Image 1 (tube, rainbow, N blue to C red):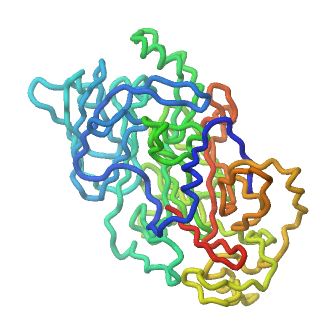
Image 2 (spheres, helix red, strand yellow; image 1 turned 120 degrees about the horizontal axis):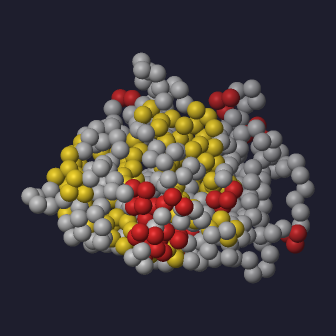
Length: 474
C-alpha cells in the first residue's frame, strides 16, 4: 500500500509537478531517439551516484551531445534499414555490437580495424554499422571491444523495435475514453500495453573507473572487480524517480518511474546491461513474462502468447532482454474499498466522460462479473464501501514521507501534518520495484540507494469536496 519513504538527497520538486494534472496524452513511451540514421559518439563524462559520489565513465552520445549512461535508446520501426555511425573520441579503440541483428560494418579505406566481435574505430575515427530492423521487441547494444572493461565503463544502450501493425494488433478505442491509446510490443492479440517503461540494469566498480580516469589502464583489473553501485537506467535510487532529462543529472537522462491507472497493462522492458545477475522484483502483484531476446513465448502454431511465465522476480542475465506485463492492477478482492468510499457516492458535475449524478458502481450486479468494475474509475465494485479492516494510526504516529498519501485509500488526499510538503497529491498507491539482491539496494554501502524505484498507481479521478479532478499521466 502507501509505503513511507524518506531520502537524504534530492527528490526534485519537478517530480511533484509531474504528478499534477497535465494535458491528456497518449500512452507513456520509452524515452529515446527515433529515425533510421543515428550518429553516436564514444566519449568520456561523469555521473553522480546515490551516495553523493561521482564516477568517471565512458559512454555513447547522440552526435555532439553529452556522453550518456546508458547510451541513447534507439527507437526503430520494424522493416526499416538502420545506419549507426560511430565516432570515437576515446583514447582506445571502441565498437558496437547489436545482438539479434544481422549487421554489416563498413569504413573508408584505411579506417577501422577488425576486432574480436566487430569492426572497431580507433581514436579519432568514424565507422558505420547497418542492419534491417526485421523483428520487433526489446534489444540492446554495447561495445564489442574489451567488453569486460568497456561495458563496465558504460558503453551500453537499449534498442526498441516497434512492430508493423496488422489485423492481430488493432484494438478498438476504449468506449469510455478514459484509458490511453494502446501500443504493441509484438503484433499478437495479447501482446499489447497501455504504458511502457525501460529498466536497464547495470553495475560498476568505482575503483576500476578511478584507475581508468588516472590513465592506469594496466591496473584496471577486472579479475578482482567488486561492484558497489547498482543502477536502473543509469541512476541510483531515489534519482531513478526524478524527472527524465533533469538538469542536475546531465549525463544520466533516463529515469525509471512507472506510473499507471488501475486496470492498465504496464510493459516492463528489462535489460541485463551489466556483467552480474540482478533479480528484478515487482511488488504489488506478479508480472507476466511474454518474451525473451525478442522472441515471443508461444508455441510454433499459435498467434498469441500461449507460454507466458508468471513471476514476482525475473532475472535478465547479462546481455539478455525480457518483455513482461505488470497488471492490470485493480485492487480486486482485497476485501476493502481502496478508494475510501463509504457507499452511495455520486459523481459530481465536471468529471470527464461521466454523466453528472451517476452513482459510483451504479451498474454493479452481484453475481454478474461483467458489472464488477465501475466504467469510470475501474473500481472493483464488490468491495465498494467496505472499510479497511485495520484501524489507521493517528497522524502523529505515522512516518510521513514524500511518497505517502496520508491515507491507505487510492485518490483520497487525507490528513497531512503541519508544514508537510506533499509529493503525492493524488494519494496514489506506491509499490517498490527493486533488485531482490539486498546488497544492491545500496550505493557504496549507503542505504537506501542502488537498483530501486517506486511504481505509483494513480486514480483516474480525484473527488474532493464535490469537485472532480482527472489525474492524467504524461
